[in-house]
Length: 464
Image 1: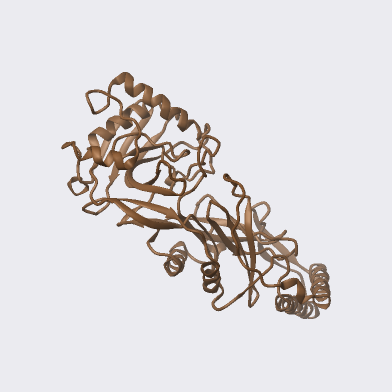
Image 2 (image 1 turned 120 degrees about the vertical axis):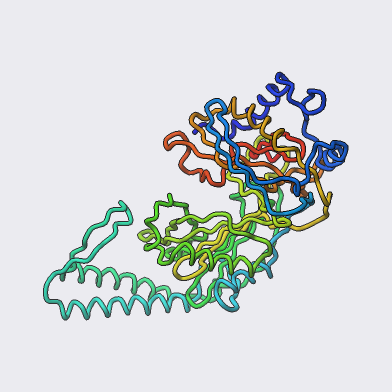
């Protein structure tokens, strides 16, 4: 698929085409983007604008250029839609520790990254000794070779593994090497390496990258070890299991989404439905108004040789019963004139052990309600805008199948940390395999976003 960032260019091109076709609403003039509070005032003057309670879900069919349209229009079951002003909050130490408490089950202590507790190493040593004991017992009772089913995590192939005396002796040798490593760490352990730390926030760069960390913390409890990272203006919190094979490792285990082909349920150890239930209960305990949007199988690498499969459950905020768009667009920070804030979302990783990690970014705080009952442009006018856009869009064989009303964040002019949340129409669809980037989850990628208040096209990569 061609670069997503071309949408900014297409949006400008579209405005030129609009002026050529004369499809503006006021005597053929083109609507330009204005501050939302100004748009709301203007809308009160036009009788042709609709209230949400007057709109009905409807199916629309059309053929626009190279784009096949068979749209199901999704309209929330609410009477009115307000417009609110929201800002971002910083994760506090108490909030972070509270999340870790829920992951671990009871109180935990915050420590420097780098060195786990001595109890962790002792527990690991006991587990290795147990493995050695089992292998030695099987070797002493060994009679003849046998085969077991095996899944090769490197190649994805399934096969068989032959268990014989040579295999058992090799496993005993490797386990004893691991035991010796843990014993050496315990013998030379220095508690001074585990001084408690305080979480603090600092920033000298107005446009920090996501890789600019401002604090790290390591959380240990009963052998379940967690790492927390928080970032700067992005307000991104990442908490997850830690790869403890190296004392230099300081990142949470991250999980990459997999193509959902129905083959991962057994590897994860629980069904998607079970994972969603666990994730929803957990999400409800740490924040309000977060609703599940989608879920994927995912894999994380816990050490050099092993993989861990999980369900990734993605949540976004509901505002007055209407979901906030769960966008999947790269933010074009080079063309922005402000800090690249992202949407609030919560990703919860669930395995057969329960919740084992999360990523929470950009928590919202309510500031004020700008309008109680905004009016929306009629669907017919929105579709006229969409028609002209899809007649010039760059994709071949694009199928649009859903048009959904939801909230999107729009920058508040002159304010670096506040945003309007306004209703928009998103157009979702699909492309044939081979004609798009496989890393983009199309069920949360909007091919077109239109402001439901004034019909202007929004470039999601820029945020306006």
